[in-house]
Image (cartoon, rainbow, N blue to C red; front, side, top):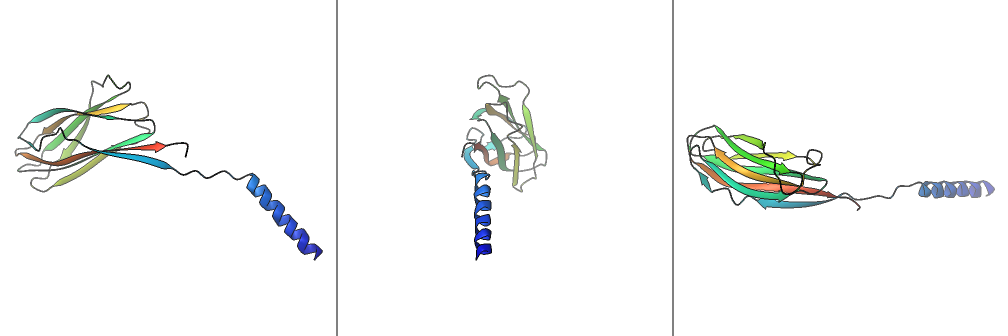
Amino acid sequence: MKTKLKNLLLVATMLELLAAFTIPARAQVYSTSIYGITNFPATLATGATSTTTNIVPLTKDCSFALQGIFNVSAGTSNVVVQGSFTVDGTNYGTSPWTWIIPANGTTKVIASTNWNRSQLASYTGVNITTFTNGNSGTLTNSGFLINRTAYLSGY
């Protein structure tokens, strides 16, 4: 009986020590916003470029993704989307980033690209500015989406 009591006290003491050194659990919480790029035209003629303004604010610790769905009536040349980032929310970079998407003729293309939160750490916004059809046929735009996901700390 004395041995059982000692073992029970030892286990209780170990549990108390373990509880004293535990780290509280925290959930990772994310906020996701999905935007449609509505300023891109539904069709884009051969060799044409559409210039537009689609500004998306970026917050600390967020990632950013683009998805495009389109097809062309003829050709397999590139479709090009360009944009620029800002560090102050007002002045956008003069050297745009370029996303090149190979077309596949009349077969729909679904393409995506993304930037992680480390790549976006110093930016406060992104502006998608141009959409170019380098093909010999008309481009049909089925939709371009923006997905912004922010990590919410403190939870």
